[in-house]
Image (cartoon, rainbow, N blue to C red; front, side, top):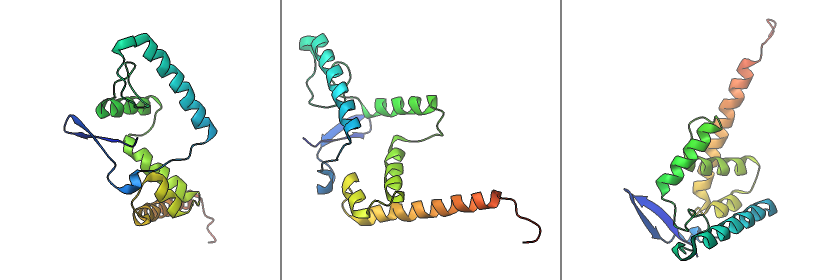
Length: 153
């Protein structure tokens, strides 16, 4: 099942992905699969503890009673975790941008990145590459500017 949950005002609206590219399989490494297995066992314990009060939403990530998390609650939890980890202010959606930029910086083909993140075409993904390249140039310039130069140069 592929469902997108978006917030409109305070109301949460469920529907299909915005584009056909949103219907996709995302390959996972074994460590991710094991993490999901551990979570599923935890969720099964919660299901048993809640009994008939358990809400069978079919979602992977739920509250302990099986109900869906409200997007604002997820955002708030992320912000608290980021603050506790001493990260600079960052939005949850910024993690998606960072992931795309890291994949491109690692040399992953833009078409593969585009498919992985569900872009409808690789043009949008290439726009990330342009931004990543500019940020990389700016970082390199800052580092070079920090290196002392001899008077003979």
